[in-house]
Image (cartoon, rainbow, N blue to C red; front, top):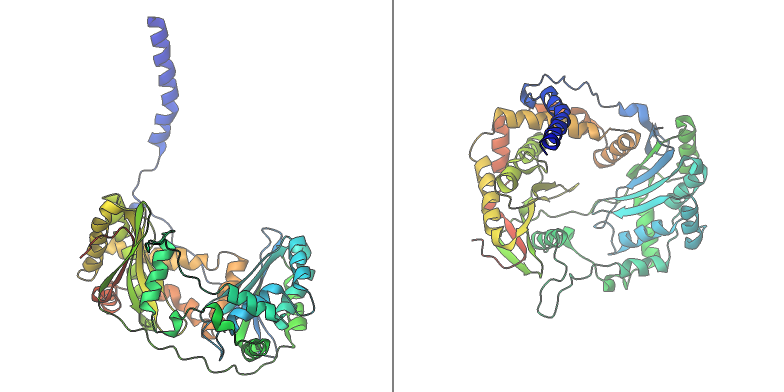
Length: 463
């Protein structure tokens, strides 16, 4: 027995030896003391990727041969709130989904399936994007379908009917008014309903809004907004750049170049007094959204506001809000801040979290505590340094991490601003943000006295 015990101890010692050796070999230097070299990343020159057609259309072409795939995207500056007839943008999006006029929707879907393509049309408040991803071997056919769909979509009564069928439906509740499927998305939806009430950005269409919409209305919307100077295109992947440039000119030169109608004026969202909104849901946890409308942030303050949010609740493991709610007390898995800016007009700034019912009050108090704190005192040198590096290097560089990201970033930036000055100056603007700037914007753009607090779950008195 003694021999067996000795043998066991010897085996355990031998097994532990490599582990202890490995531990001793680890570099335990704190990240702040590591001499990590500065990033040498430089934003790509947009002129290298840009293709400008005589009709005013601008496209961006980027080679990316890591995988044999090609991405084709069109971005059109026209969204839900544009046009003179409600539902026209929604119906046009449905038309883009069904393919070009000279092809049945059934044949279009069959072609996409044969190419194992990923195809999507996304309608935003201010713009539409069309995305088609295919294997490089199918590029010729895919480019023909893509360009034909953009230039001549199949606008039919069926598109209007499909859009009406997808019109907003109420959140499901039981006979007692209790939400059946409580979730974070439900809480966020309730938040937007409350802050956008009475504003054009908050209008939700119902099926009856499409009853007076005709194909002529949808065609008029298309003709007014889908013009060469009101859209951009991005092409990337395993491509021959020279050949793609020729295809763009051959396929899209027929687009008319004219000035689109004036954009619909979006009234500023009015701030309300702080209020609590309770929505019962039969779930084991409670979801919390806290926030208010965000007035347009001045260009000089954009990066300071991003830095402030990154330190406060930027969606990573070292924010003040995450440390205070999860690391110290284990109240939640996440508590993050979201800046939602609109291309024109007001956006919103909100904080999202969730917890067990019994700790929701403590979670809320902790969230509010760090919000008040960042409005009273300067952030630390370390916090500012981390935010500078994370935003100016990591977040910024990811926008140009490969050909697809680069082409998309430049195409969307050009559509929104008409130039590339925002992306060019971004790193310098981030690094110029001071601790005083963070304190200033925390007070100028964040107003706890106007917070709308949405509770989806158990009714808990937070006041």
